[in-house]
Every structure is written in C-alpha cells, then in structure tokens.
Image (cartoon, rainbow over all chains, first blue to last red; front, side, top):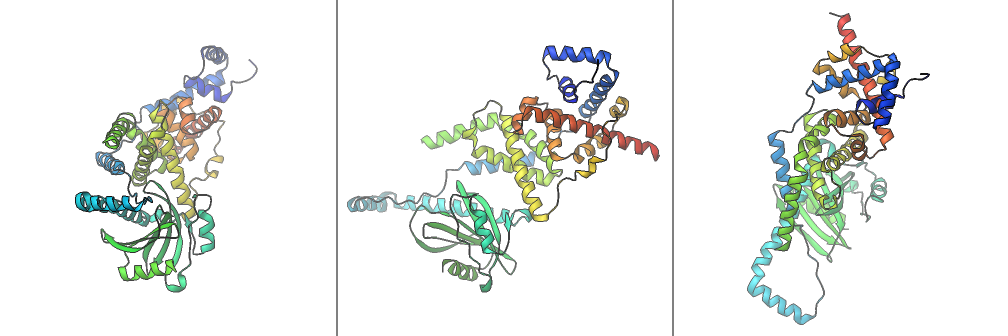
Length: 249
Length: 182
C-alpha cells in the first residue's frame, strides 16, 4: 500500500455508505495500514460517545399543543374575498332583495367574521413584530432605502413615505405573509409606539379608512390606488388617524 | 361542503405524515439556535410553513422535507439576527488553530462526558453542526442529509468528515486540559 485511504471514504465506511466492493477494498487496506485503522477506531469511538450521550432534545407537551393550535388556526378558510363582480343591474336588484330578506344578516355576520379574522391576523403579526428581533428586515429611516429593498422581494412595489417631519419616524420595512399572500410591512414609530403599516395589492376599489379595535390595538384599514392598507398600533385612535391621513396624502 | 372536507383531509394527512417528526424538527432547531426559546419559535414557524406548503409536498420522506424547512427557517432567522446585531454566528478562527492531523486515542473519546460532547457540538460551525445532527441523532443516510441540506453528496461527505475531526479534537483537548489541572 502506497497511500492512505481517502478521509471521506473512511467516514462513508464507518457510516455503512460504501457498496460491497468498495467496502472490501477498504477493509483490505485497513488490514495493512495501521494509521488508517487507528483513524477508523478513533472515529468509531467518537460515534460511541454520541450514541451513549442521549443528545436528542424532545419538544415539550406545551409546545406541541401550541403548534397544534397555531396550525388549526391557520387551517381556517382563507379570509377576505371582497371582490365585486360587475353584473347587470337587475341582477343586483334581485340579489340585493334576496340578500336583504333571506341571508343578508347571515352574510353580514360572516363578512364581519372574515374581517375579524384578518384583523386578528394583522394584530398577531404586529405583536410578533414587536418581539425583539422581528421588527424589521431592513432597518433605516431613509425612504429611499426601504422602497428599493422591497423591489425584487415582492411582486408589487409599496409606497414608502418619510413622515418624520410630522412626528412619525420611519423605522424600516419587513416582509410578511398575511392572508395567504406576501405583504409589505412598513414600520413607523411615534414616541416609542410602533406602527405597522401593512400593504398589498387590493382586490377591490377604493375604500375610505375604517377604524376598528382588536385586543387593545387600533387598526385603520383602507384601499387606495389599487392597494390595500392597514395600520396597526397601540397608539391612540386619534393619532393613528392623523398618521393615516398623512400616509393618504 | 367540499372545502371543509378537503381541509379535514389535508389536516389528517399532515397529522399522519408530518407531525410525527415534530421532535426531529424541534431537536434540529434546538441544536442550531442553542437555546430553547428561539428553538420553539423556529420549530413552530417551520411547522406552520410546512402546513401552508403541504400541498406542494410530493416526496416520500416527510422528515427530510420538514427538516429542510426547519433549516431554511433557521437560516432566515440567523440572517435577520446578524443583520441587526452585526454579530457573527460563528468564528472560524476558533478552530483553525486546532491540530487536526493528530489522532486522539479511542479510549479518551469513549470516556467523554455528555457535557463535553454537547459543548463540542455546540462549538461547531453551523454547516458542520447540521450534518452531524442529522447523521448521529437522526440517523439519516448521506442521501437524506444531502436532500435536507440542499447540497451535493460530496459536500455532505466532506463536511461530515471535517465535523468529526473537529469534534474529536475539541473533546480530546478538553480531556487533556482536565487532566492537567486536577
């Protein structure tokens, strides 16, 4: 034997990844080469140390049920389909009559529920973003940095405005996944209050701002120029409205 | 309701194929992040992603598929982490001064304590740590590891070889210093 076995082959041998022929060739080599044989023994001993150390971590019961809950929540039917199809006017009349009389109430209820689910999701996203490391993917107060950052990561280009002269400081941007599609979250702050401005292409026409509250957070959503927006914050509603007006300008 | 039936079916399939590997997902996340809180965040995020993209799962090995998602979730997380804190996850210099050509005695390695093995693994660079975990703790084949880490077989082989050499040296060095200072 002139040379030692290739190091990678020794490991493949130890791991039973070699075919029969290669294995036998290597065993022949090991019989003659004390150095390689010692390597194999040493690496096998290392594996023994692993095997006897019980290194595997297992997930706790609490964690397991938390995951199950999160999955079940995600399983709920996709939210928000407020597209309006254009139909002949008599269809509208007929439909409107039917809806009003028969299922109007029910639809209103389910529509509300859908909006509530979305609001829920946005608040959850907002809260998650406040957990130390998740607030921004791109951290900057410069609108000309935030906007290009989104380009290429999204199939739309969100409008990013610098509102620092109005007391709303631009903190940065983040990619999010909301309501079954990617969303841009533009992050602002006002006296330590974080505002997440979520946006993605809208499926419906312009809608004026509507304020709601969810779990102690204020939300204002609207649709403008083909984009859906929702501002979420623990800021009071008055100031959040101011913010929205500035964004809409 | 068709949609309801479909979603129940999806849930049941996910239950049967993916959820049995929740421990594997957590274990990988736990070793990669080296702390339980981040591990839970990453494992949960990965399982949610897995559920979201479950329709796209065509393979036959759900564990490999899930671990690939955990790994990608971890990589995204670490990238975010380092861009914000400017911290480097791993210091390559730490290991360059190790004399890797030396072959530690098998006995020394066999007598290593759990703590020594554990801290040696934690000190490994992430790309070596993951292959070691998949091989030694998940008992995955080279082919499975290559699939889960989206790398070539040759890369898996050389990383595993390098990982074991570093581990061996770390453990042996520690044993030696232990003997020196009784």
